[in-house]
Length: 257
Image (tube, rainbow, N blue to C red; front, side, top):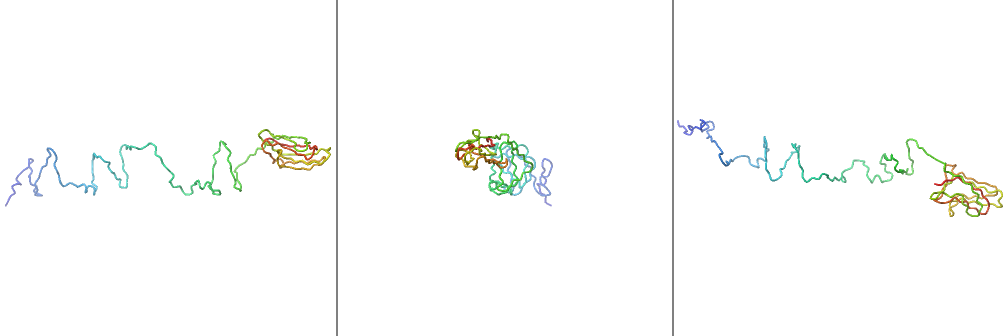
């Protein structure tokens, strides 16, 4: 029976230098100084091909940024992240953002007849009047409307016109217009001839009323039953023009507006 002499060699610990199970030589490797080259670990390609689980802390000193992929999930960062070259305010343009269906655009808002729904006008302070138009239809008002009509400034004026041509009956306050609500013409009973009277505003104004009066006759006009009026231009006087030098007693109710 043959015997392998190496099997009789023992390590300092008393173990056989030959592993009797695997029939391999036990080798103790110690790095006393420098480095020991080891062959056989995973290559770079192998490490990239299959993820290798790593436990503990990994320190890396690199000169280039590290690309991190969350593989469609998310990354958790402990601590703070510092971003350089990032201004405090970022300009954002919404010009290309899509609008929701039915959104009001400037093109729709300016098209006559396009219904844009209910519109609320914020004019609680009454800073300015709001102009609304019915477009030839009607405007419905919810609630009550208070109309204030004051006739306190209406002034009755009585003047006897007797000159042939223009006779001034009422002159409005400077920078205003004469508004007339009532006018009457009465030919004096002592007139020697018929006379034609024309009521107008201003010397070159258009005739508003033209009446032929016999001696003792009277003509009156309550304009719009007191609900309407006739009005001249700014600074135009109320004038009665007579076709002849006859006396016509003229009465008007008017105001300067």
